[in-house]
Length: 481
Image 1 (tube, rainbow, N blue to C red):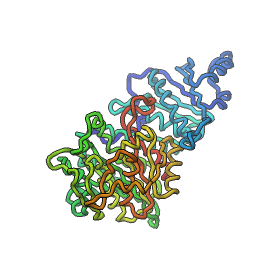
Image 2 (cartoon, one colour):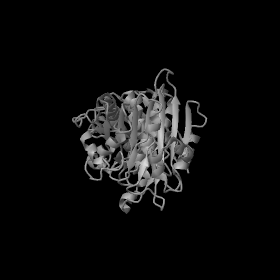
Image 3 (cartoon, rainbow, N blue to C red):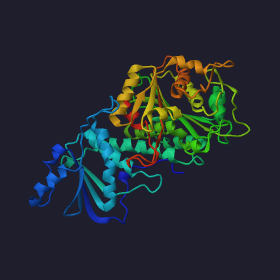
Image 4 (cartoon, helix red, strand yellow):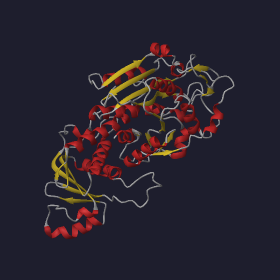
């Protein structure tokens, strides 16, 4: 199993490339008129006018094709502040087009030059190009790519950060794409430990079944008890900030395969349930960024890893499990398992008294039905935290929309036999009731819950191929900055 990925822009060029140079110019309309295209002056006037009419044109240059991509940075509609006129996300979305052209010509050398675009926009371009190159197997490998901005060599700082972002997103995508016979709670925990082994900024603690029993983690153990690969919680401590600064806690749901348990999913719904560890993949993507960039932060990351399987030892509807914090939970539906696994991980995180807590999970189908594939549901007990996450999402194109923590709905989770049930069972307001369940383990800690889909459907543009999409990684990176 190949757990980690590389930046595809930094790979060596394959030998079968053509001995030509592809020049790609990414420009605004305003900057277009000032560019020297280095071709015949007699053609320049009419060619420039032609370029102004099209968003992409290919010109025959002296050493190879010249591809001109005109980017419009202004948008008329910002979707009620869901998206904003941010160069990063606008230019990023245009980059799939560029890679399709570069791959067409298979040149040994590729120069990508930007004009009239900010460092933020250039960063978005690089991130988009690297995302476009990723494939689960046989990722696209162009020739050498050199970046320039306004005629000068691009800043190494801009390039390094952009590549760290794209590597983090691609890392999350890759984990979601791994088959569940290879990525299970035990192998996953070992690979994370291996990933960070020689980096002194990180300390990794794996809670195996013995440690989880000692901690009283009855919920996550109950979720995983039917599987031959037992549950794990992985705690990763990252310390690069001031010793006086409290750490924040981030928790990711990592159900490596979700059959639904005894409340088994129908075949079509089960097909892609390897992606039910998408929240934990987001966290590992963020870890990849932290490893590369070393921001001055203190962060604890928790991965709640289990497989929701079926056997004669499976948790049953009506079973009552005891959470790490002592709460008794009646199982209403074994397919509402992710919130159980996360509840114990959240309790573990709260033992260290974090300044705030954010959890990310592929938690409910109701979230996708309400907001579609590309917009995460955000629920929070703190307006300032919610606003910062929403802003980070709108600036990166990694979008979220806030839903209410409507506490009267908690009545649907009341149990006659325990402190609460794990599912409302009504099919209505499922994203809200799932968040209300998790909130019972939060106390007065500042908290935000992101309910993501984590998968790109076939109808999406080619920037991110079908499969894991790394949802949440860019938002959290921006939030940290």
